[in-house]
Amino acid sequence: MFTSTGSRGLYKAPLSKSLLLLPTVLTVLLTVLLPQYQDLFIYNLQAVRQGKQFWRLVSGRLICLDLKDTFCSSLLIYNFRIFERRFGSHKFASFLFGAWILSAFVDLLLIEALRFMFELKVDVLPAGLLGPVFALFVPFYSSIPRVQVTQLLGHISITNKSLTYIVGAQLLTSSAYMWVVACSGLIAGMLYYSNKLAVQKFIRVPGWAARCGSVLLEPVFSDSEPTAEAPLGMGATLDIQRQQRMDMLDQQLLLSQLEHLRRNAQQQQAQTGLLNWNRFFPTLRHRGQNRHHEGPQPQQPPYMHPPDNTAVAEEQVARLMEMGFSRMDAQEALRASNNDINIATNFLLQH
Image (cartoon, rainbow, N blue to C red; front, side):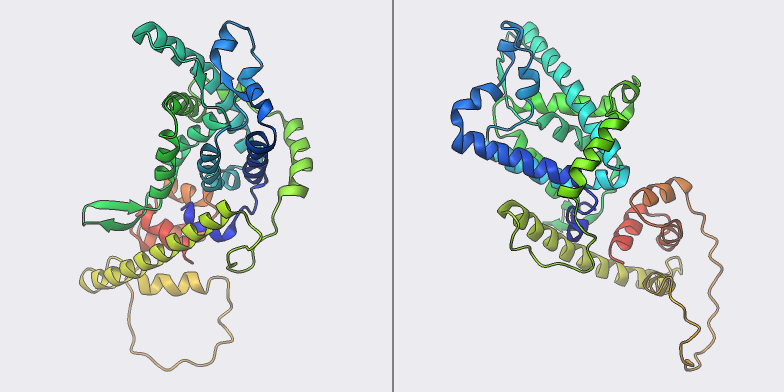
């Protein structure tokens, strides 16, 4: 689902766009133009414990000092922008802020646990906004439907989420102790997303801060609503152009899978009559259109469709509505797919 919405770019995601641009610019400045100031942004836990330099818990967890980490984290933020569209910028910012705060405490606990249990001394961790990035894998895994795109060698399934996991694995293996940051980010994400300890009530972005951020960010980082499929942007950065090409490739794979599903569905309908795709396709393609002005149609042999009494699970309807689809379209998609939310999601994304 993430990559299938690539044509919409960063529309309605000003916070994601700012997290893509600002840390990247600051990383380039520190690594290329101002390397003498890199020491201020090193995530040095020994300096925090012994030197009482608690400010490093802030400065060391904002800007990546490795261009490869910046590239991978930017790709992940671009894919995770769907959460800002779904929940709104305020809730998305609260999740990032909560995960950022919690992951700092988990970092310290993990380092002390490693030193006590295995006598492993870890003084420096990878710098940057990495904890919240890994934390976003929690809602990504639990709330985004898994849709199979193709198979490799007949056994390895490639889904719409595979690319995101591959980029996450690349980020995980970029340095020796990145796994510590990844573990703390995942733990922080589970704590905040599940809200078991009511952390969302205490750790969140205040309303006044969200309003100030909206006033400052939206005029600068908001995009206009896309009206048609846009070609690759010539003015975009190389990272974004590569991601757009990946999006286009995923769209082609999804369309190919959709045609395969349609052929299978028609064959199944001829045998069992369970999937009535011929009824479903015109409904979505022509929804909202007035058909009273159409010319007379040639008389067709009468065909009586069986009444559609398929029960629709409200929980699945709610999940599709959270993704931005209307209630009517969600219900029709679920009825036509016999309550298979993966097929329904895949179909709605293509129409």
